[in-house]
Image: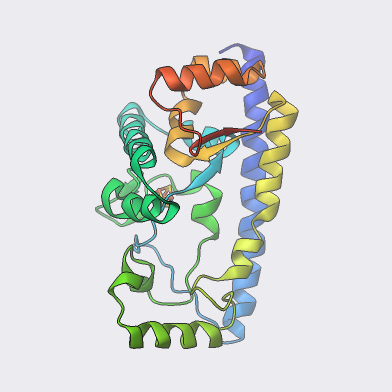
Length: 245
Ligand code: SF4
């Protein structure tokens, strides 16, 4: 990569990292107020229940993570990307895609299974930063809803409705998710300023492509056709998991 390309992409990742820092401060302040009012956030180090969800990111965020991977982890991320693509190709609905991703594609390879922590915590993408639970961890597990009886589902709905901070339907803390909107906007602006094009999609697919020089050269030239062809040539193109805007 040329010096100029490195500078341009450095500007993109720097903008994202600053947005992550701002989100960290704002979400921390929000959680302090929430705790003072009696609210409880159950997420803690060692809890891995949500690390098998599909994750949507911008290429700007993927670049941040891509820079932190060694060859071994990059290969594991690529294998995960290929499993996500295979799932997308055969899933008959969005629900099936999500459910199979969680149960069959499985946990993010960046997760340290020994400690239950994210092995690249400082570089984790927005979705991993803004997902917080107002209920204990087992409610975040993949098929918890399917395992509940009708009575348990009714009780879940009542509990969610009376828990401050939820959206009234799910046990996740909605304001902490809304607070991350500036991060998405920052990533969007940074991509347009740098490349004239936005790239969004699956976290592991984009993290793999962010390390691919030919893909990145096409993006930096604003040539989405060439970028798609490169992704396609590597078996990493799927209209749901790689989008240009
Ligand atoms: S990047 Fe880290 S926090 Fe996000 S899913 Fe992977 S292991 Fe979990």
